[in-house]
Length: 115
Image (cartoon, rainbow, N blue to C red; front, side, top):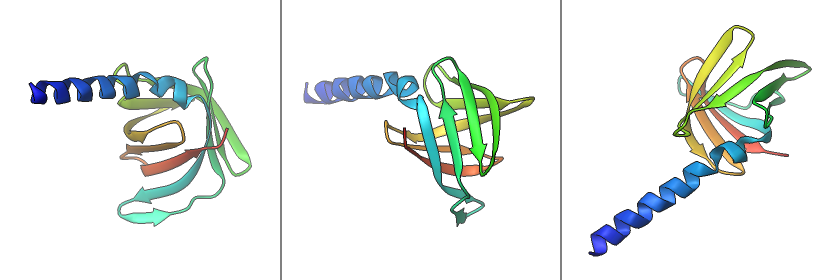
């Protein structure tokens, strides 16, 4: 019986954290660390802005680009599309203040929410 209660608790805890992910994504995020091929770096001023309507703004230094974002139904994949380029990220960690995502093209990216 104890095992079933633990499994039930873990199931509900997993559902509760997954359900808020899309809502928590909305806002401005600052890239604080990038790791690619085992090399860790701190990038120049780089931000991602996610809006409720599915639009996206990527800011890198003094350049910015508009696009769209989409979160998979199970909240495990984040797709960002700018122009004809679409990158699908695996979500490794995500809460209301920190996000870690990974894609072969860019490596592992760690963001902190600032707004």
